[in-house]
Amino acid sequence: MPLSLAYASRVAFTLAAALAAALLCLQLDTPLPWMLGPLLGTALLSMLGAPTDSAAPLRNAGQWTLGAILGLYFTPEVTALVAGLWWAVALAIGWALLLGWAFGAWLHRMHAPLMPDVPAPAMRATTYFAGAIGAASEMALLAERQHARTDLVAASHSLRLVIVTVSIPFALQWSGLHGVDLLAPPPRMVQPEGLALLAALTGAGALLMLRLGRANPWFIGPLLVTMALTMASVTLTAIPQPLVNAAQLVIGVSLGVRFRRAFLRTAPRWLASVAVGTVGLMLVCALFAWVLARATGLHWVTLVLATSPGGIAEMSITAKVLQLGVPVVTAFQVCRLVVVLLVVAPMYRWVYGAAEAPS
Image (cartoon, rainbow, N blue to C red):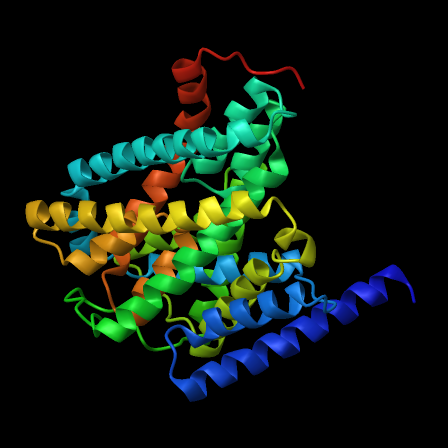
């Protein structure tokens, strides 16, 4: 069978299984069925050795759709509210950098003695970038420049992201803490001409971010374009719900396929430490969110999502589905990602006095 046909077959099988998992979760009334169903179903199949695969263009289209959706929340009134929280955003960024360093230091203390075959500088870089609260691909790339164990770094971020993405929505649904967003909802009327124009404009934004080499270009580009339009009181259209569901599905698949059989054989003690550490991160982030809620007057649950060690798309879509302050969550998560990507490597060299390793 030609490679392209085999790949297409794997993708088709995975999407069919993901759709079945989403429909099952709908029947079971689980939170975020269109994302968590595909994520968990695909992860289970992948770990059992099934021929699963994720198509990068579909994942990009999913991020594109979600970026456009979330930008519709940034009305002038909402933008003024978020802008007035700049000091809270700055505190959350500093908190994330400190927490990532502490997580990395804990991983180093736990695992450096267990991996004597890994050179000390490489081990230090491995644990540091594995602990940083940033995007998995970018952290793995930075770790590679320091000749670190990129497999451990990637495994750490994948496991952390899935634990956060799965546990927080379930916890919120069981607690009944949802629907507390008092901000105005985005437009609900779908306009075909407006949808086509919005797709063209946000697509151009994604391609620009891609050309500039920015992180998450298919999410950030559409988000910034739609934010700019909405802040200028330009409303082109709402996003059809089937597109929203499809976007969640392909993002869930892209997370689930990371969990191959080989993933489970990747230093089981390392994965166990990451799992325990991630639970600890969520608990201290929840405490930090409570303190920040007292200072800002925002709902605690909104700030839990805003400061959690999860990904932008996953936490923002959780906020959207559960009606928990989408603009605040998105603004906090986007600002954190940008600053972490800019600061985490210089911070490593400053803290540990390490020069960037030659390529």
